[in-house]
Image 1: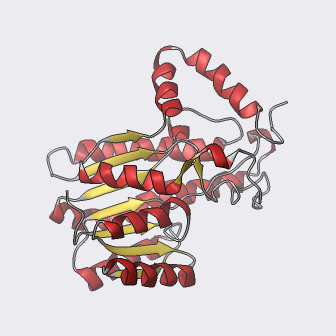
Image 2: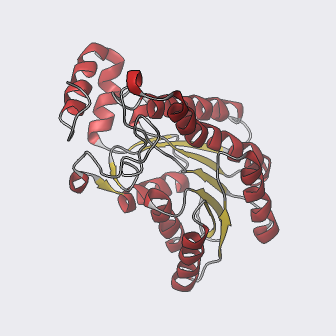
Length: 271
């Protein structure tokens, strides 16, 4: 798939990987529908990309936890462009707290954004993507392959997303629709700063060494290439690929390795 003149919806497009994806797609000539709650920021991004890359971009205020917002996002895309070629389910939120200490509402909020947001947007976009034989993309995580201590809600939501996308891929095996599960490793972005603590408040400060992580721009380029080449799954770091491989054959060993890695975090939850 050449992305020139394709219509691409991106949720969570106001920052991090979503913003980087918008820029990367614009470089490749795609027209964009940017969805997020931060409407003013989205408008600024859309205007900047239009001016810089001579593409068309619109901003749509959208909270993916609200089904009606997801429906409106798709309707606005069709009003403006008349088609949908790619849906990128990128909107996401994380959390950091031991399950025993965590308010259940925190897990519900993470699941609402990461899983149900993907389901809602995909439900309304799929009929149009069937027409264009386009792509549905889920920005998942290595945490969707291996549970991470202190991220019970996040891991559960990404496991759920992976299962949902897997079924979607099988159901569309002969329709021409491409389904991509993209799993970045730890990426330098604001997701950890915005992570919820045990009470649902934002953590405010990353507990990890962001400077050693893959950048969101690097992740965006890999995902854009994956869409163009209609790749099935992207696991983007050597560490992630090794963990997924080892977990199939040596799960107990991986348990220890993951525990030790998370235990080295700043202000670790593991004592």
